[in-house]
Image (cartoon, rainbow, N blue to C red; front, top):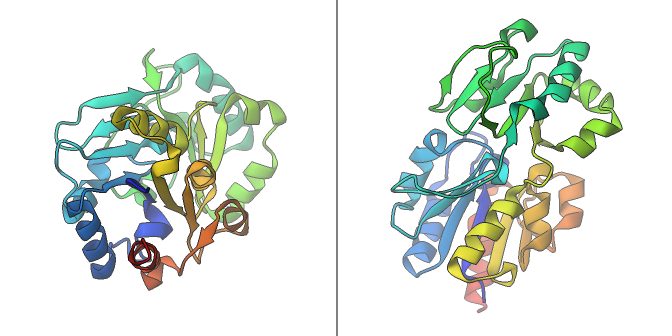
Length: 268
């Protein structure tokens, strides 16, 4: 029996205008009020998506969000951390050297702010993120010794294609590398993905992946789609994600989430 619905945001729950459609909102609110856990799963910090959390009414004590692509599980109303996984500054050194060799900007995130590394130039990450998080320009040398959530290479899609093809094998083992959007390439701790965060949250409620439904469209959704009892790929998902998921729905601009949820729960 499905008890939790995990939702990627960009190009999944959100339409091309970065909005939750009225139909998606209505169906998700109804299911939430009926007792299902509705969990947003994103690479962004919670403050950057708070408008969506409020729109869906996910503000009770049992509401949580998976942020930083699984690196942080946080209770919505209190911002209390349920689970956190990151990496030390030293673990970012190979990524920094790679970005410098490729002549591409690098943004480093802890669980509170973004550090654009000035010596590598200005990226498009602030523009793409378009959310409430502080940007604190720094150099790699001046980054504090603390835990970091991830590194970000944000660039035009064609340039990121080239960068991704140039990734040496050792980097793909040192990090969990995912293309969360065409213009964003993320470098997470090797053990972290959205399924990691969902595992911690499911355990918190005493549930398993057999009670999870998940929706996604891109590389950073593969883990949760593969492990969920009901994994749903959007109609606009990449071919690889459609192969991972057991089910497909319509696109993010055709209320694909609401369409699948309405059909599925009407048959239960």
